[in-house]
Length: 250
Image (cartoon, rainbow, N blue to C red; front, side, top):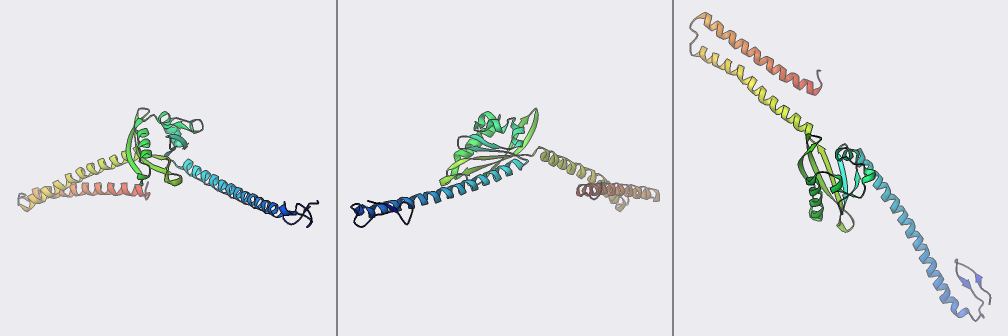
């Protein structure tokens, strides 16, 4: 019998009188099926490679964004292990990301309260639909620092919990500025009330006729004018502070 390759790769043709011609049809059908399966697998493999490249590209973009953020960022997996951290987090907690990947956050973050927050957020899972934001005070090298802590759940396939994103924004300086402004307002209020009280008191005495002679009246007028000048200087100082903050003057 003579077999001749013909048509699609893998198919065979037999002579009509060949005693093996009875199995040629099923054999060719089988070979055609295998060829189609191989082509489908190759197409699926190409698609998987494309998806892997896209996933890697998205991963690199995500990491680039995290590394560029000035706030401390730590990303954990569902086992409370650190998988990504930026330079700010390294400086804050004192570890090197390269050496600490897949390490427990309990070992990396020397703050039991933050570790507990990460675990609580992970345990909430899909029920945690919004970000959790809390204010946290931490003592770093003998200095008390205040952070705004934001925690978010990362959901993976089938909406299962894949990890937690922890972001710490240092609000220490902002709190100091807020306190300075609060103290400033309190001091200004006191300083403004003093000349106003004097002006009001001497105007009332003039209206009540307590300044009977010309000399006393002149003295009252001079005090009122002096306190008005003082009030004017205070207001100018306040306006100058506003101009400095806006960059109008140095």
